[in-house]
Image (cartoon, rainbow, N blue to C red; front, side, top):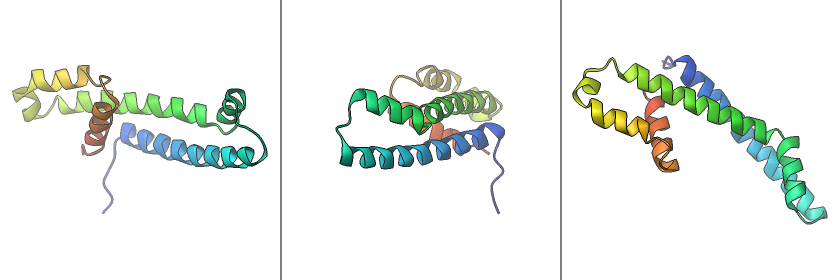
Length: 113
């Protein structure tokens, strides 16, 4: 049986899939251009915009932020939150302290049902 996901979880999943697809397209475009010419910063910027990678990245960050916010408000209804409120709130406050901590919180947020 397929798990029921929240809107924030669904939006994150869609944004992540789109980002990964755009990244693959960008890689192919870079490889094709590299065979013909040197990859300059200007060319890279053009490719990032042309492939939609930039927009996909922005959408992914927005979806991640919404997922993190949703998980924080959702977890507040759990008994374990009330028992560990200060530690959990500190974790959410420091979500951007490192990419690893952010990713870990996103993965945990995707496990909430």
